[in-house]
Length: 207
Length: 207
Length: 207
Image (cartoon, rainbow over all chains, first blue to last red):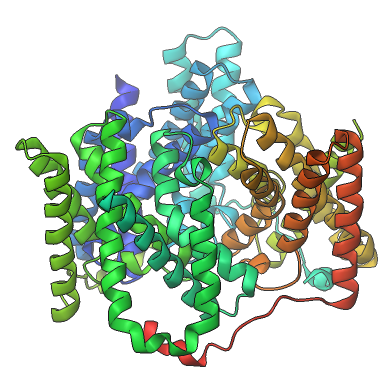
């Protein structure tokens, strides 16, 4: 029940992030609604298509589309004052990321997947919405370039699967993984943690 | 039968639009055939994968590929004189858009989907081919940026579902929705109707 | 058994090509692992999703992910000295292309597809990993623009299907198609064979 509420908050936050990027690319109202919806529901859709888990969440529950389209339209209306809310937005976005990860793990477990695929399904749920958003906005996906975003999703999923494996019950494992994952994400933002990049000067030969 | 003929005309028109954009991006003959085929059949494929509706249309009917590849090759041959046909092309492209929408709705209905998903499946069929074309050509999808293109697909699908709901028989509802949708599209082109965009100056904080 | 070994070599080669392109785009370590994995396994995943062939290969065999992630990490470590290996890399990449094509054909055959779809499934397996890599790296897919790469995949698949149709046994047909396809690819690289492109000056009217 709590997880479902967090899920709805998360798709609203993701739809807002998609809508904002769409506005900055000059999309019209329809485009903003589409990019918001794809950002919010794209990660779960990619996961379900890869797992063969039909029907997809938003097809079984078309009412989710009201949340994403509504969030995109409201964002378009009030975007001028949203920068006051930047910190709230990052908090909600981080909460969405870790909630998506736990939900993605649950769905893969319900489909009888191996633990490695369960963790991966969580990560795909968490990051592929933003990845599709960036592809449609014609930029290299941010998640591939910077910040400990996908790493947080992997950490959250692995912790959740580990807690379940240790016999912790599902509700406690969910909350523990979400709490620890969100803390990790906020610390990564606060201290600007990054993964290493590589000097590419030596690899010109492969163009 | 009529709808099937319109469908074949539509995939030819879509394949031509993909081939033309591929040529303008310097693609070779193979690339032109691929981009034409993806533009023509990509919307229906995305719809079927999201709905879990197997086998996909072009897999059950590989002969559709002859139409799309043939259209792409002919387009490459005669592109120099195609600008004389620009108005015919826009008419056929609009016909394809509304026919794809009605066909997409039919397939979702046959799969027992809720009315909202039926209309959405029509829109996905109509616009995702062009969206994939633009992603592969490395530009922000036109459909997200301008013109009442997706709106026409939504209108056509909603009208079709509404007419069926009122008890109109399927053939009459198809023709009514196609006629009204095509009229809407041509009026939108003629009078340059657009959806609103938004001033993005206030949202710098979310980069 | 030989085909399986070639497959593992091929996914390592493809993961390396993805990792190298990711490094050149400034991706971090996580991004390099993701782009390497998508390049290696994306073609087969697209094929399986289009055919409805579940479970996907890497979901049934998560250990494949160790190969692709390992290859990406090793590539990131040693990239400075990789240009000495450029010719080896092109050879292994070509071997991967033709092996992917034959494997893709086999899977479509096992799913009872028509011969045209079998050949197409081989081509999709061979080229869609690189196509997804290029989309995520925000460039027009190389395979649509130059070199006889997809043509080699089509040729290999068609030859394989043709040999089977003539009654040649599967092992001999695999090896024959792989040998001929690889020879074709190496000749195309050596002599810089290309497909025709088209003068696009006459098609400005369709913007």
